[in-house]
Image (cartoon, rainbow, N blue to C red; front, side, top):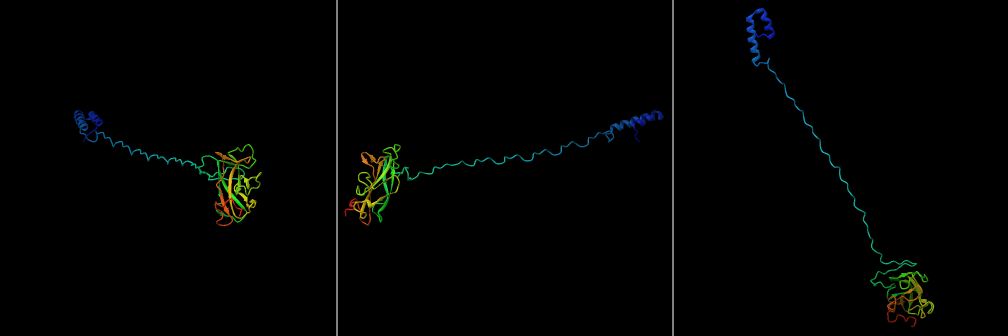
Length: 233
C-alpha cells in the first residue's frame, strides 16, 4: 500500500525508523513512475472557428448615356417666289447676275377662247415694285413690267401708256379688245422690264424683254410668220 507524504510523517512518530524507510521508498516511487498522479495534461487546443468572408463585390450600376444631339437641317431653297405687292420673283436661271424676264404662261401656240388672257412671268435679278414706288426702287434693279401685244398694236395709249397692261404681279391680264385689228386671229405677247419711272431697263444697250409667245383663237394660226399682223386680216 502507498502512503501519502503527510501520512508517512505522522507514522514516523508512531512507528519509528522502519516506517521512515518505507515512507521514503514509496514517495520516491510515486514521483518517478510517470503515472497519472504526477503528469500534467493540456486538454485540447485553441481553434479559430471559421473565417471572415466578404460577400460579393460592389458593382457599377449602369452608365450614363448621352442621347444624341439635336440635328439641324437646312431645308433646301425655294424654286421661285412671286408675292403680289413687290417681292422679287426669281426664275433661278444661270443668267450671269443680269436682270431677265420670261413668260411661263401661256405657251407658244396656245389657243385662246376669250379676249382676256392671263399672262404669267418670272424675273431674275430684279425686284418687282408697284409703279411710282419712289427713290427706294433703284433703276436697273427694281421696277415693274410692261406687257405688249402685237408690238404697239394693242396699247392702251401709244403716247402716255405704251403697253397693254403694266404692273408688278403675276399673272397680269392682257385685253385683246384693245387690239386695233380685233380679238380674233394670231397675237404675239412680250413682257419687258421697266424702271419705276417707266423707262426701259437695258443691258448692253438692249431692252430687257422676254421671248415672244404666239397665241391664236384657232389652231395653226399662231406661227411666228403671222404673229403681229393679227387684225390686219
